[in-house]
Image 1: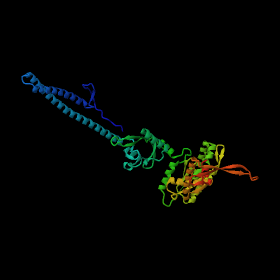
Image 2 (image 1 turned 90 degrees about the vertical axis):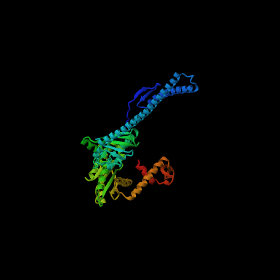
Image 3 (image 1 turned 45 degrees about the vertical axis):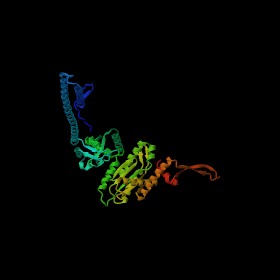
Image 4 (image 1 turned 135 degrees about the vertical axis):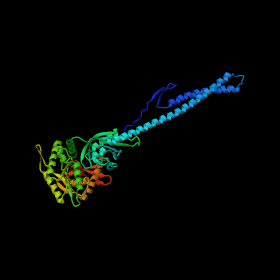
Length: 473
């Protein structure tokens, strides 16, 4: 909020020494004029004092009656002038004090009026407004916000601003918003919000930092500029925020939302399953056939997975060649495995890419909830660990998650981190193994073998780290 200052009308007066003084802005013009009078009175008083000294030193015969009367007349004039100057300065000081008080009062009243008007605008604005601190903790909301989101003020004050975010915001958008706010103090863009009933909607918002002049605290004001738009636009934007544009399948956001909804309605004796699906060697096909045919292949894979799934299952593309299936309810483990085998059969059938025929396989990891966990992120991580186990066996198979896989996945991550450090620090060595001709025993060549000399664990077997190197190719 911009600071407002009360402007005081000013009048310019010319002081006796030629300096321009602004009457009304500063009171020194009054005291300067009083100083002139005091100086004149002091000069006359000095003349009277000299005259009195002369009278005291002289006899009556030496002074005429006219001279004495002149001195007495001058003394009376000086006394009257001193009284006038005293009253002038006293009155002027009071006027100056009163005027200064009036100025301060007007400025304080101006601040109060501006504050009252700002509060009135905040409360009566048709635009939803939210005031947060610099950490995005809600400090206040206006009635328009309550109407737009369905949240009451007492429900959101003290809560994170993300309480009504849909979760569909791109991380890059959030990062750019934070950078823009830090650089210029303002950001404007599109955001996906969610009302109290769970309905998501697009909202064009303006965020601006401000300084409270009373407390010195900084905060951020968020204003909803346009949460309307046509229903068709809303549906299109909502669909784009929750679906993969290539395969038209639900994306990670919608997958997580549906998982959360399923878990909320779960009974204690019920079970569901999450299947993580990775296409084997897709990178080789994508590099050899080109990105366009790679996208075409992913579209056909998505279609075939959807054919194998049921109407109540959620098939999603999470990233790249990584797909997932949410099975809301299973009677036993064999039901989840049967679905996974059907998906493998669908993917094993040849794909036709224009005039090229491509054969594929896939690796599938299965997690059962709530047995293996009740958090979507945790379940996906464990299903991925089971998928990695299948890939280590050559792919084209199905694997249920086992608790030992957590330890194996953690160990794999540690080795991968240390291996990157080993490459950086030149810990990998070359050993040459001779190739001998068995007919005469002569050395005809040498085989180069890579070895890892770890500074703490010593020489590490190639069987430990070469699979990691191959998986990165």
